[in-house]
Amino acid sequence: MVEQNAKRCGVIAIVGAPNAGKSTLVNALVGQKVAITSAKAQTTRTRVMGVAIDGDAQLVLVDTPGIFAPRRRLDRAMVQAAWGGAQGADLIALVVDGKAGLGAKMEPIIDALAARKERKWLILNKVDIAIKEKLLLHTQRLTDKLDIAETYFVSAQTGDGLPELKSAFAAAMPRGPWHFPADQVSDATDRMLAAEITREQLYHQLHAELPYAAAVDTEQYKERPDGSVEIHQQILIGRTSQRAIVLGKGGQRLKEIGSKARAELAQLLGVTVHLYLHVKVKEDWEDDRGIYRDIGLDWVE
Image (cartoon, rainbow, N blue to C red; front, side):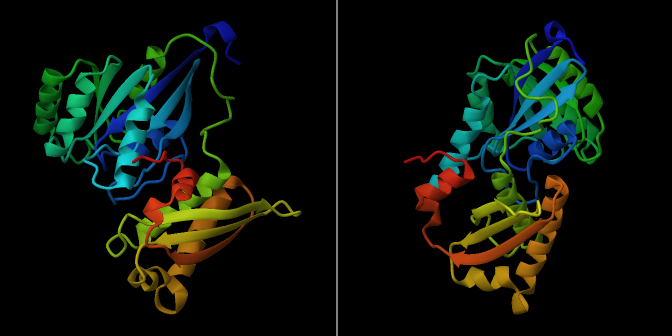
């Protein structure tokens, strides 16, 4: 048991461009899944908080949506959530895809970070597949533009460099009481987690066919008398033509999505899960305030 006066606790905002590996990094530091991942850009939509412990320190890791040039209301809400997640953080960790490097998509992020007063660390991710000489070039370019206090080279996928990064995060946190119980790993409710796990399966199984602008709404989440959980969800899509894609031949694709999501939820929740999925065409779902509220985004004009 860590003595109260010896404890450290702080908030670390994980920011970066889409597909930099932020969610994979947060999951790896926490030690279990708290944020969904996929190869599709802009998978993370809302601020997701993961809680990790290293010795006497509790790290509150805020996984933010990838920051990009917004074009629609959903995009604007996601970018707002990203910068909102960095507000008041003890440390901002800029995660950069070491393989993809720097490009036009990084410029607005760099400009915005340059104006912020929080401590900034640079995390070069995917070093296992990156060209080493380019990593040094990326580092130099970013340190020339930003006040970077520390730089770390990691692979969130393989775990390379993560123990050192986690220890460094812990040592950098201010002294103070922990914000969460020792066994809590996220601030997400089970209801929210259920929707995210199903959405992740949509992306994994329909990566090329389905636009990222699909949503999962958990209509009902209740515990049965036997301790199992019953979940009813709507998969919201924008066009009628997408319905057949999600259903698959004879409804097989939807069954597979449900089967995989059910199995993962049962493992995460530690109980039997009864998952019922329905596909609904809702052309204007991106303009529905209620959907934004349900998925944890603020409404933006």
